[in-house]
Length: 372
Image 1 (cartoon, rainbow, N blue to C red):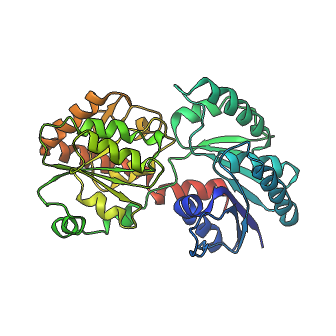
Image 2 (image 1 turned 180 degrees about the vertical axis):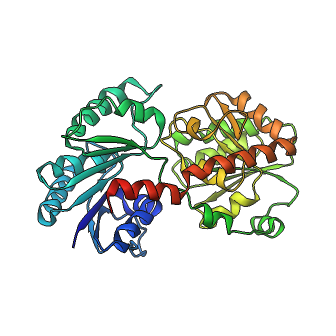
Image 3 (image 1 turned 180 degrees about the horizontal axis):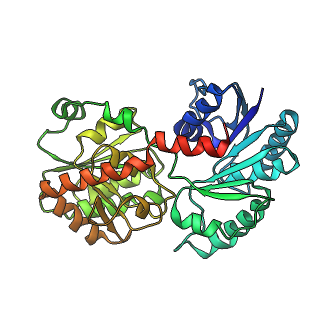
């Protein structure tokens, strides 16, 4: 029986969030499926990975210089040497680097790495270029297939020197299950009541971890400038900036208009009742949240950065704004608030565009790359 190993820093918020369709693909093809990642489930939660035959809890840390990553490397190397996999597919910066270094002794294994957004990119800090760019170029020597999910990364990766016969592929993300999204029918009035919102309120939605990169601070400052106060700003996600952002919304005088919903298992239902999607991030690879919002028929107002520009064509399915431009975000939100006809057309265009990023399309591409 052939074996495949999937490697990522964490289980719940990476493997189970993005890669289950590909584990399923191998499982149904008769392969033995292994996963190596850190158990990030909460205490009391079972670490369950569908379609996984064997799971290895590897103590990866996101901080690259953590001593635990030395332990993770040694454990990962032993796992690889003991199993001699046919394919290893690694993800995330730390998981990707350690897997490729550990796998350089596995001579009959195809090593695949998906870059979900290089940390070096147009506009990135000098330290990011000095730290991550050389590492990625070195690891390319131990990579058979490098998958990039946006066009900027693809063009840059084409200049790397790879393992003998190594190739770079562009794949449009991890795939969005458009069929599942289309099957969701939601009564706006009932859902709004559940969330404590009046159905005639204009709903602005953001989805993402409450951290500095997601730039919720700019979003709050932008919505605070709206003259029409018949709106609610829903923020779905968890993170260490929750307390700060709540205090900021109070300081801006919009605490009654902002609802922090935390992690949601009903996120597609919330997309369905929203009017626009606001996404002001500083850095993205290819944002799943924007793809989900497009698939549910939302016009997008997002930052003009790598990844976002692959998905949003300014004026066609949304608007691109400089990530520091509070006035720019406020202007676009305000315009859409008063123009239902424009929102409808942007939504139609977004649904058409997102078809190329559907799970069905991505799985077909990955099946060819895997050779199964």
